[in-house]
Image 1 (cartoon, helix red, strand yellow):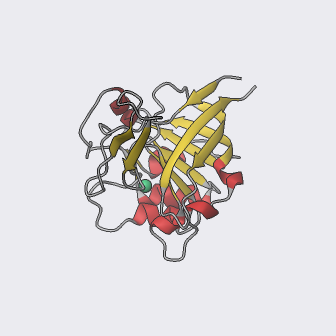
Image 2 (tube, rainbow, N blue to C red):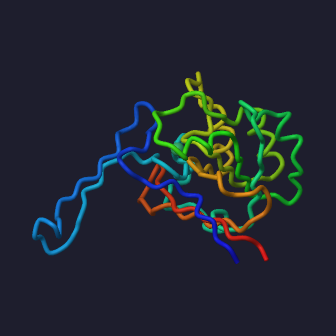
Image 3 (cartoon, rainbow, N blue to C red):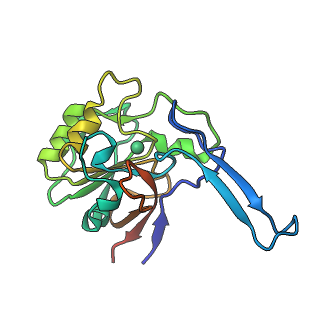
Length: 210
Ligand SMILES: [Zn+2]
């Protein structure tokens, strides 16, 4: 069964959310320089590239990265292609058949951004709050999107994050769905295990169902 890697490679060139720490990767030991091994120093924020937002990202006392239930991070997921919309709103989510859907990944025009080096794109497609509330009511437990935030840029209050994380719905951001057709897959999403983490990079893979 075919596997699709929907993870963005981490590098110093990867854009980060404005205000977050930059990504720095520096060789501290180098075979070329005569050292016994290659070793690097990594410095970055906790919400870079393809990453998971646990409830603790926005909710005081919320579930942290290391406490996330693996049975939500792994399982059948629907990839929904929303076409060229600027916002995933109530109209968009109501048009989807969500029966039996626990995990949903939104493929938007954002995915095209990953194909070329770029500055942070402020005009990314996001999930609005009524749509997030609708997904929660529909029983969805994990929501993914293909850019660095699921929330409208320059928000007044993080109401989309709160609607999801406040109901223990896990958010996955920074997916690259450009090479994935819409449909159902097995999702394998494993964020690094940072103790009491507010977020962290994940390797995210879709396996085709037989
Ligand atoms: Zn995040």
